[in-house]
Image (cartoon, rainbow, N blue to C red):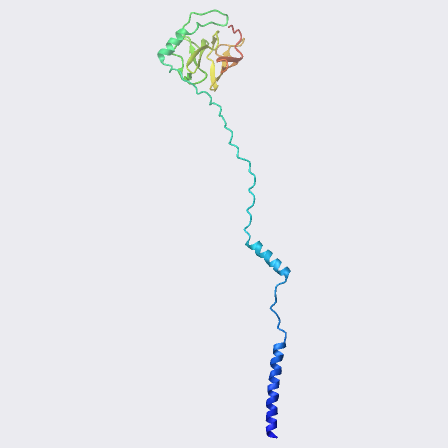
Length: 223
């Protein structure tokens, strides 16, 4: 009896083992998940996008740079030229060349211009217009005076052909313009109290290369 039970137990054990083994062999094996078609497409596309060399952007069309226009600068104003210095001997020679004094009545007087009493400091050999005022020899306050004009040291002539009594006040306005205030005695004035004034301007005209006068002269002016 005992031997039958042992044999039966062994047979049962072997049968159970075979059943388990066969069961294990017949169980379905889950295959490894494979990517779907759409997943493959997406993956391939992503890979291609990542690995593709980016196409360089087209160079923008840039118009060629035009060369800067050549600017021709206007020529600089002509620099003034300078004449000779006015020495005492040159001043004396000029005094002898000046027209004889002519008073407002038109009479020409036998008087001499005094170079020693003239003031050469108003002469400028480089200015467009300068001057020197000459008195007559032995002049008094109301004696005639004459104004000699110069352009860059060159003698141009006199401001008026008629010479007026009383020292004229000449001031420089600019390099090429002078203002002259003539004094004269009004009716009833004494020479010491002469109250009349006549103002003139003399300007160097570059176009005509001459002196232009504007303004007034004392009464009785005769050219």
